[in-house]
Image 1 (spheres, protein in one colour):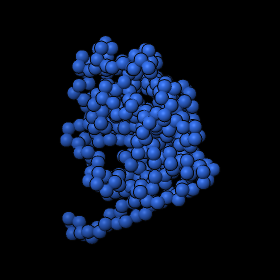
Image 2 (cartoon, protein in one colour):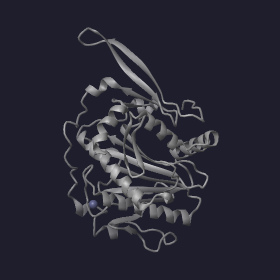
Image 3 (cartoon, helix red, strand yellow):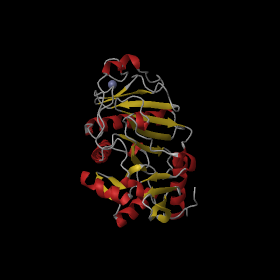
Image 4 (cartoon, rainbow, N blue to C red):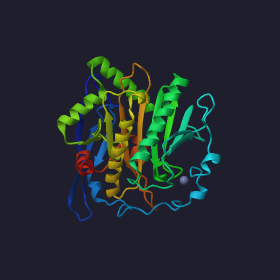
Length: 347
Ligand SMILES: [Zn+2]
């Protein structure tokens, strides 16, 4: 990572150009913008010339996946969900599975950490991007919040917590049935470790919260601001690490336990607005995630990140090339300011 001034947020951008003779024999120059992430110092690239190259599979919204109506084969569908999914350890809950409204939460059969669980939305087996009911999304999040509160009580050292979603196999989803993943552990993931250090260091040196300060800059600038839902502020990421990357920041809140039911509902509303935007772009896959470090000393505020993934459709190429995997710079094709402009009508 590039060095960052620990007491400042710098929104840095530089441009390089590639020159060559194009197939018609003319000298051509193509501009590539390189932005430095104000929080992590990681660089990313915007290769503007590729915006004109229409991505295969985005001419229209792809058809639903082939198993969109195969509810009998789905372990998350009712009634088999009650016999084919695991139950919580009795030390954690005597109920086996947690319910909130129509949402059902149970352990992940293939865990990624000490506390790894799945929170279903409602009874629907397949929901197209942007078409979930806001209430079912919110109930699933509230269920996650209640599970994480139990973990905090049961294992106070498992402070590294996260909620994520993989929509469709192109985004890493193994089952299409709508669900969130929850993870809590004593060992941090990379982003939890790096962001906690950055947020606490920033606070110690400047006396300010990191994401609130980022937000102040973006509100003053205005070009990447999209809208609000309740207390959540929605922005296009300045230095995106995914296509059409959008953040929702809940300033000054550093714990999932500080998120009220109405906050979760407003989060769900904002997520669905973003998905409606993605849907209009004829994109059907996305990842989202929000993390927290549940220590009283944490100054790391809550921020959800949502990004488009390659469409789930035949012969679509991955959005991660050798550049992302081998050099570590994400390359997208359009300016975040344009993402914000396109997303605003959905808020
Ligand atoms: Zn199902």
